[in-house]
Structure formats: C-alpha cells, structure tokens
Length: 149
Image (cartoon, rainbow, N blue to C red; front, side, top):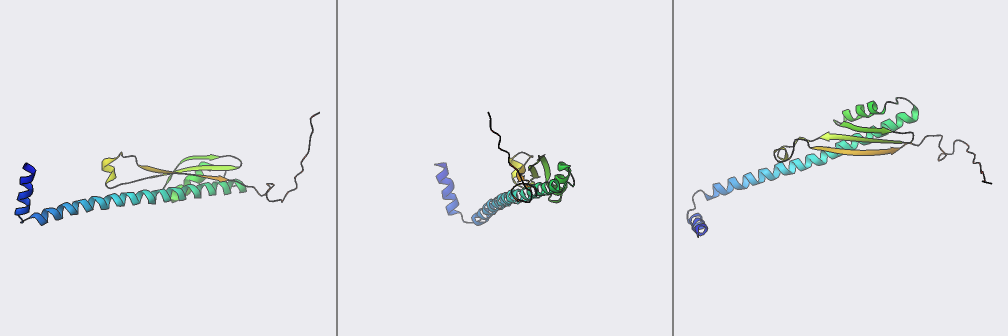
C-alpha cells in the first residue's frame, strides 16, 4: 500500500525524476566500469606472471646446458624482476627446471571487497635436453645385454 502511494507520487510529480535516475545510472555504470577494469588487471597480471615464469625457466635451462651460472634462484629472480614479478620457487634438477612466478595485483574496486593479498601465480616447467643425449645422435651409445643365469 505504501509502495503504491510512493509510486503514484513518483509518476505524478515529474520534476527531478530525470536527475535522480541519471545519478543512479551513472553510479551503476561507474561501478561496472571499475569492475571491468579490475577484471582486465587480472588477465594482464596473469600474462605477465606467465611470461616471467617461462622466461626464467628457459634462462635457467640455458645456463644448465652451458654450465654458466648454476645459481638457479638468482638467475630466475633477475629475469622475473625485469617482468615486475617475484620468484616464489625455483627447482632445478639435471634434466628439468620448474619455476613459479607471482605478480601482486592492485585493484581499485575489488580491494574494498576482498583481502589485501591479491596475487596471480604461474608455474612453468622446462625439460632440459643436452646435446650429448641419445635423441640427437651426436654420440655413439652402446647397449649391453646382460642375461640373468
């Protein structure tokens, strides 16, 4: 009943209705624009973290092949800093390198709603193939067949 009376007043009094509606629509579209902008930041940060982790893992693998700098974490950190990311983990073995990079997100609207620790992580794994591996055929390999008696 009260709602009907309010709606009847709004319908009959036409002065100022357009300005209230304009303000409401402007506020709605402003929030929508900020939400879309924050969503785009997620995708941009994801690409940046992926590029950093892939570049770092390839750089570490190249250093392993040429026996240049065997400090995997330092090489990966240097590459990640160029991409504005941080290395979380870097695991090197003889034939595999795994790097985890992270990028912190600075939201405009979503920081008000979510926690302050918004981050995107990316993991890249590279298999190291040395020139003396059997795949290339540069070296002769001999297979010995031993039989159990």
